[in-house]
Image (cartoon, rainbow, N blue to C red; front, side, top):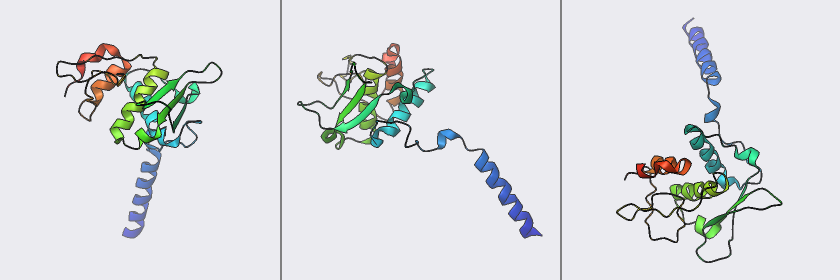
Length: 171
């Protein structure tokens, strides 16, 4: 009798767990971002989630935006957002540069390029009194130090989605 009751309880808990799963916990669908290198899917999904958490709707799937990791001609060019009149916007990231980056640095560079292609943000070279960059939209040609980290991430993303938050970034 105890064994039957235990089996029923396990079945009920399993059903509750299965039915209670949130679709946001599901892995990114491989078909979610057609024309986008699979190494970028996580970052595209994260960009949409971060925008939504700030009240901004971004649908990269519907936009037709493509994203590639490949070779970029030109010295010191890490990535770019190319606007084409005959096809949707395209993000390209330099494969050599990409291979040297940490996870957070990859997120920053993808979000930077999405800032151009989706949010239509220009470069912003502002720095704080210590010389730290105040935006992930900086060009890389200035003299500021990157400060993007786990502790400053929210401030940088607030500024990315709303430049009025530029002074919120704290160490």
